[in-house]
Structures are given as C-alpha cells and as structure tokens.
Length: 187
Length: 188
Image (cartoon, chains in turn red, orange):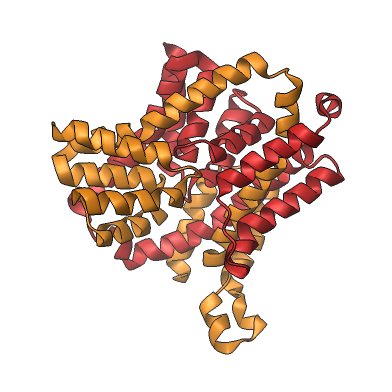
C-alpha cells in the first residue's frame, strides 16, 4: 500500500507541473523517477515513449501506465495513471467554474511565454541524454534523420503528412529486419 | 442512458482511436461536438489555449471540461475516466507481453528501430515549441529578413537557462517557475 501511495503521489506531482504536452513530461520523469527514486531508467523511458506514440491514447497516460505497471503491477498502473490525472482535472474544473477567460489574461500569456522557453531547454536536455543509447551507429542516425524529416519537415514543406503512429511502427519493422540484437545486448 | 455513462462511452472512443497523443484527439473532439452538442467548436479553440497554459494534455482537459459543462463535477470525472481507460487497458496488455518477450530477438531488434524514431518524435516536438517560443514566423513573413526570424530575448534566455541547468541541478519545476516570473517581468 505504501508503494501505491508513493506512485500516486509521484505522478500527482508530475501531472501538476507537466506543461507543454507528453514529451515535456520526460525531464520531470527523469528527475523524479530515474535520478531521485531509481524506479526506472532513461532507456526504458525512451522505449515507453516509442510505444506510447504508436498505441491509442494520450502519450502521457500511456507512459504513466507503463511505469506504474512495472513498479507494482495492475494496481500500480491504476495508481500512477489516476495520480497523473488528478491535478489536470482539478485545474480544469476550477477554470471551467471560475475563470472562463483564464487563457486571455495578459499575465498568464507572459508567464507561459517564459515557461515555453524553459520547456525548449528541458526537452533539448532530454534528447541529449537519450541520444547515446539510441543512436548507436550510422544506421540508427540515418533512421533518426529520416523520421525527423517525415515528422517535422515533410508536413509543412512537401504537404506530405504521414501519421506519426505509422512512422513509429515502420521504424519498429525496420529494426526487426535490419537490427542486430547481439550488438543491442552489448550496449 | 444515463448522461454519465454516455460521457464515459464517448470519451472512451476518443481515447481508443486517437493515436499519437496531443492534437491527434482534435478531429474526434470536433466530431463529438457535432454529434452531441456537449460543447461548441469555439469551446475547443478556447480549450487549446487553456491547454497551452495549464499542465495536462488537450484531450484530458477537453474531457474534463465537456464532462463538467454537461453533468457537473461527476461529469468531469466520468468523461476523463472514459478517456483514460483505453490507454490503461492497452498498455497493460503490451506491458505484460513485453515482460514475457523482452529477451526475444525480434522484440530487441524492434527497439533498435523504435528508439531512434522515439528521439526523432521528441525532436519534432521540440521544433514545435521552438516555433512558438524562440522564432517569429510572422515577422519573417513580413520582412523576409532572416534576422527578424529570431526573437533575441527568448533565445538569450534559453542559452542562459541551458548553461545554468548544466551547473545547477535543481528540479525542473524550479526552472519552470523562474521562467514564468521572467516571462511576466519582461512581458515576453
């Protein structure tokens, strides 16, 4: 029970400060769960995000479920997911009830312009940390560039918009066809 | 059918079919608005703005909001529960599968391809934030000068934050809070 409460509390905290969508969650998870508590590793987090991207549902919830399950089974998954949801539910209920023009307030807009700058740096740091274990050779580097091009550049410049889930699944198939598990095991 | 049950079912469908998170929920939210009248298209636009300025994903926020406007606080909880259930169920199935097959050669090889793709997606997400935080596409479109594309103050702030974070290992939340204050003081 103590572990479930800890899971709930840890994800409640993350849910309350998870500005900027699913990927902005990564630096928070790293600090709270990898560095401080040792519940998971950066490598595992990268895998969870890859799976969360190509399976249905909100990425942040998918990742929360994964970590909770690994730590304490089905009950752990429920604890982490409900923990993550608690903060946003309370905040939106308060906004819906009292502050319908919340997002239009000048002070809120300035604060979030500042927060977005910080989110840029936090996400960049997360990418740099994941890089070493994921981009292990030339093949993975090229795959990275191709997927980045398809996800970030092609939609606006070529008007080619391949759903991200398809890109992720294709990368998994590519790995099965061309990956070398012996090398992976050594890494 | 009770309204709470309908909220759960409708948002369960959204959670089930929106793959890729975040904005992937939007087409389903528009459709639900047309079919149920629980909220308007303008509400969705407002919710996108609110989601950019509160923690939590747009899908979660919209479900709480629509549930609340339709059936009060219990509605807010019911709709959010509906949205979360598919994630919970599907990931539990996959997690069990991975537990059993994590040493399997094919599963390992799949991750050889999945990890670079995952980082590429995170980089794409980074580009999206950079586009609104550090560069000014409107100014660039007007003047066509590359200098006007960059917003000097936020970029300087980002560089300073990067080096400070390297030196001082505070919790990210502290840096987020400081950045919010800087944003207010400098009227970013």
